[in-house]
Length: 127
Image 1 (spheres, rainbow, N blue to C red):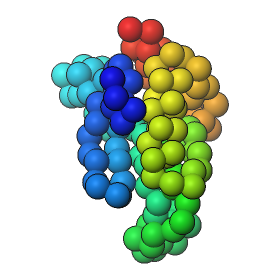
Image 2 (cartoon, helix red, strand yellow):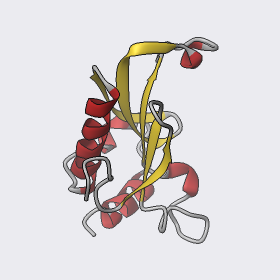
Image 3 (cartoon, rainbow, N blue to C red):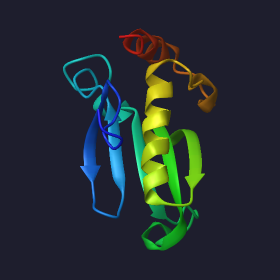
């Protein structure tokens, strides 16, 4: 595995040169034919776009690179910041490995627990 390759269980979904990078976890099980919906696929986004919560902000580049792990479109579990794309890519791979190893407490990111989904996610992680 090279430094830019995601760890086991993760797939590189998108990689723009000098731009954003997207990793997804186990797309083989997060799909409509399984009980883990595709909309809930764990995703890591590497981007230097503004994270401000206002229209159009996500189109504005910044000097800071962010690595964000989401379990659903509105459920962010971890957000980390880096000074360069290279360190953000390495940080994303580290975060992906920690997630796959069960080191990330993703249950605390939910205000309204989805126990059946989270229990099923627990089953997928140790593979």
